[in-house]
Length: 436
Image (cartoon, one colour):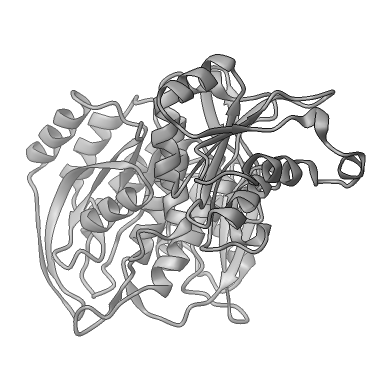
């Protein structure tokens, strides 16, 4: 039910960056993280003390131990340190059919060199062409492209030059080039440029780059298209930097502390939903959405959902669109109506109607309610977007306890539907698994 992601990187004892940061990010977004350590650093939030590489043979054995036992959905490569380690990584990963996110790590924010000078050419020749996407910051992009970057046009030119090294997709993070109190990240997705602008956060932190590339890896593993994956990863990283904490005496550590945060919880729920066995059979013609609300939502703008849908693609299901407050009209409206009566209910999901599913839900002692669309008043039919709210209100108006499921059998031109409700996305998924 969970995507598996391997990170190949160095260890940071402060847990602000490197392997430790990657694993924290994977976990926060609902993925299972595996790791191969390339080097052990000695650093904290104030300074860099030193680095000791792991032997190339040990790196090779770590990679083989993972590949022989786990099915991976994506790989992230961070700090690689020397030529031998780069050569081993290339040898073990070449030919694998899975996305690889390459995050160039040349220097620590605490001042240490994390890639030996004589390893740079091998990095460009071997690892860059291996990647599905590479995620340099401005300084790293200057080195890879061999040009100075002072404007947005320079970023575009640098991306084209990096693309000539053999990687199709490049995202250059603009944090070192604030423009009018904005940061512009530039994605070159094959031949098309996308510029992502967001507010500049005036805080020097440790771990922001690792957080972004790790979050991007999860988004890609889930199946998001690259522009959507970049936008979602940027949003998650911005939240992490805003939550950065001075745990030590120096740099603040980027941290996603609130595990009950709606974005994190819903992302986890979506990942797990896509991995439920044969879940493609439960996707209705109108597709699926999954929502999670703030406490006591007053409108759709208090309810987080996919701006697109979770769609069926053969025997797979894929999320489309980004998470957005107000992103779901229909499932969001249903949740809003239930929450008016039962404030503990904050999450909902729709699936395909099947009478056997309803029968099973009743056998499992779930609280099942329904409404009849044929009884919908004419004035409701004439009012755009009112049907869902009317129907859910009819179903719950006499209920003495929160519903687990509300269904209707459709109507003229209207698809029958099952809605599953719960306190959290995880609660909704537990009920889903019981009935499918």
